Length: 169
Image 1 (spheres, helix red, strand yellow):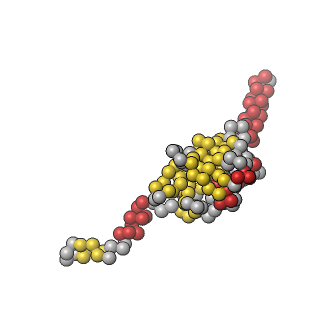
Image 2 (cartoon, rainbow, N blue to C red):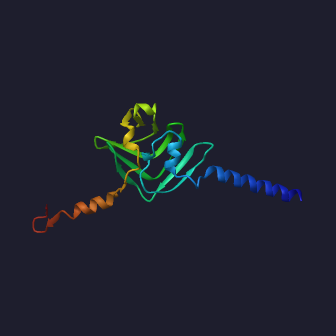
Image 3 (cartoon, helix red, strand yellow):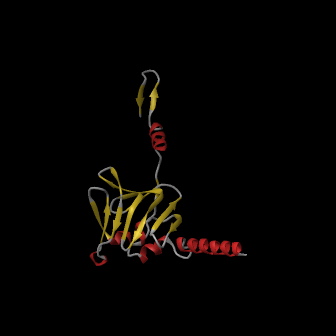
């Protein structure tokens, strides 16, 4: 009998933890808003997400890596993780920002003072500053082409002149 009570308590505890760590009723966009962040930080097309209310840890899943155009381009991996707190995302992985043809990993995102209209992206040694209004709504995200696809499309532009062995366009 005591064993049965212990198993019942264990099952209830597990069920409580599961209900706290998942939010079936809310979308990731609503969770961002509740934490003082704009809903457009993540693009359209989130297929699944996990959010732990107690720790703020989250995982966002997309169908595939993709790029979204804001003031600059942001690249989202298929899995983005981090920690959400009040007006801040820390320990971020899975998002990169393009600057001068280079991609830099975004390590954190924060909104200092909402009335300032600014959002800051921590990309290592610098903080990129954007208008908060750019992130009001989720953007469309275009699938990232793999290196093999790019090389294959470039190869189709060239033909080899078999008599001279030279590439011709």
